Length: 276
Image (cartoon, rainbow, N blue to C red; front, side, top):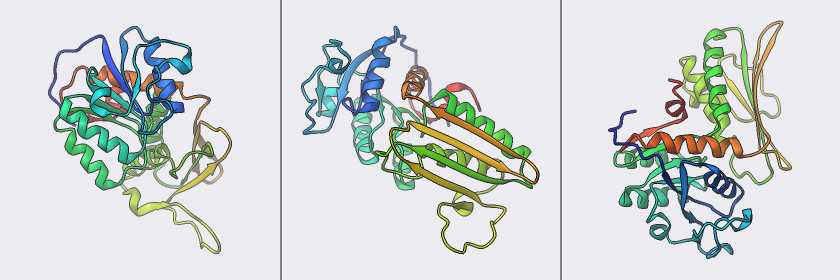
């Protein structure tokens, strides 16, 4: 990943997409609490009952920033858009970001390969951080998984179990898939060739080269991920559990700060955290 640099601005002017949603409210709260960030825009879909309201109203704060559906209006005074919405919406947002020269931090999951290619194309003109999970802890976990996979490349079966709230619409989670990709790459495999997403009936013996996924949906689980390395005589589990969305919000702000030093390029949280 390459990018050209520009001078950093310590006061990041940030717009939040999906401003009335659970993650949007958490992001707005984090921006308002950060000394080096300022809320400059708040976006939501047309028809949202929150349109026209002050973005800080659910938090009991007055920001002077109304929630709007017009992308150009919402991004007019912003340097960075933080987006945790849906793939189609994110891509529409990015096209306007490119027109206006606004950078982007994308935590949206469920992108197809074609959509990821579109994001990479847009990143030729603006700087983008794209990661299925913005949590610092999750990304440190990914680094640990990379190390573990290399050390346990033979003799261990690998299974990934993830659990999320009942409202999550994609499965497996983007974080679980990223875990699988990191492990597969460390083992010299392609996840597309070795992933097993469903087991039912007489499945036969487990292929030792496979990486299995199991998905749980229920209640208000924010996000739990466990990777099991099951060997003969021992099992190793590496887990990350989120109790709220604040970790995602704080990681997103770190990504927004990181982008201050770049004019263009596609980055991930390993770049932001120096974990390469």
